[in-house]
Image (cartoon, rainbow, N blue to C red; front, top):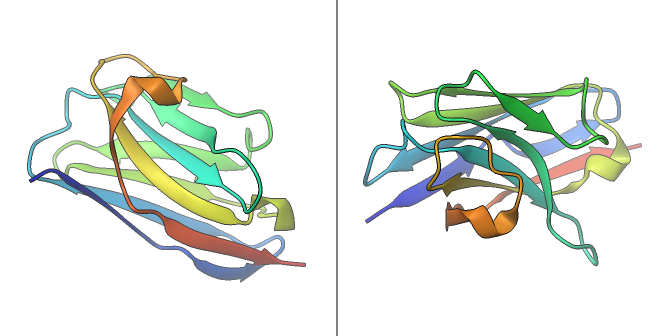
Amino acid sequence: QVQLVESGGGLVQAGGSLSLSCAASGRTFSRNAMGWFRQAPGKERELVAAVNWSGGSTYYAGSVEGRFTISRDNAKNTVYLQMNSLKPEDTAVYSCAAGLSLGVVVSAQGYVYWGQGTQVTVSS
C-alpha cells in the first residue's frame, strides 16, 4: 500500500520557520516528481513547490519564492519543505504529492499519490 505521510506542521509566529517532511512507503519514488500543495479554509488548493526526480530542478509559487525550499532525499524516500519568514497568509493544510513523471509537475492533475496533510498555522 502506497502511503505519503507528512510531518512537521504546527503553530509558529510570523517570521518564524518550520520544516515539513513527507515520507513515502509502499514503493520507491526516486524516479518521480514530487510536490507540496496547500489549502487554506475557503480557498482552492495551490501548488507551493515542486521538484523533479533528482532534485536538480524546482518550481516555486510566486508567493513563497525566496522563503521556501523544496528538497528530497531519494535514499530515504523523503521530500522536504523548509519554510522561512512565515506569514499569517501561509496558514493552511500542507500536503505532499507524487507524480508519475520525472520532470517537475506544476498541475495538480499530474499527481497521483497524495498525503493526508499537516496543519501549519502562522500567528501574527
